Length: 159
Image (cartoon, rainbow, N blue to C red; front, top):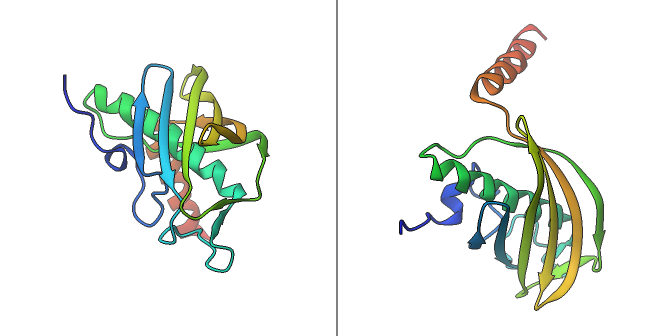
């Protein structure tokens, strides 16, 4: 069996915006990633020694991006650019994720059609549920992405 690349190679992100650390498990409908809360995270608060709970949405989104990158890798394609369209019912049982905690991020694909996808996500620490949400994402075709980028560049030059 071919070895799966490191999670960071599956994400279309660069440092310092890569927030998740490891790919634990991935399959047709799911992904499990981990992140350890450390002070080198761009969102780390040195005073509270924690990362704000709302950053959990980005942990979930990057896990979904890892799932997408994995499936592109299987097809010998580069990791696609995707867009987080929305987050529904983000519920956090904590206001912050504490330094040193290893968080397990799980995402399960509920639906996918024409580049639009819905994932059910959760974050756990040592089996305790910390946050849940449903994420809506969009991965445009390369043609649509080029069109979107071209339009935004046209708007910048004419403004």
